Length: 159
Image (cartoon, rainbow, N blue to C red; front, side, top):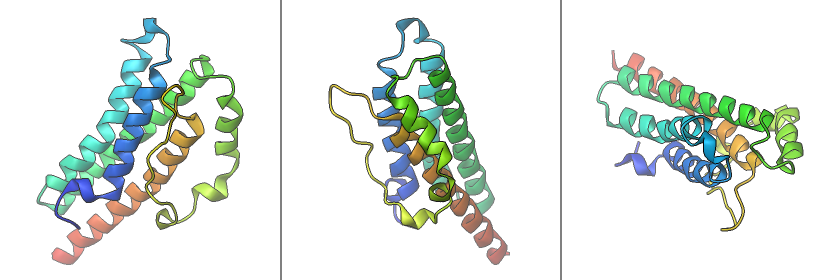
């Protein structure tokens, strides 16, 4: 599997999401600092943290539990972003991109190996696009599902 969690593609993707989320939420209203902004950031931070913790566990079922926790936090993050969009905390120009992400379901069902882990690129003066983050969330969700399945399979084989 590798010598460290930093080598896991899912951890790298999770870390990239966190960086993008911090940049994106910098533009949120200041009165949301302890509300939605905090919730979004906590959910995002939980994804790579749970992947790293799962990597450090010895037993396969413990590993799978933390990878499932990461997936749960990932979808919590997605829910928060959709709510932020409804509250108009995200820039208007991202609305069309956001809707396009959900109307193009065949792309979201592709094999996780089809997508490479890329940083969510941004201009220093511009927040990352919501589409970029949501696409990465969907891709990472598929990859985490595959990781959980592989971990469970290893557990069965070891018995």
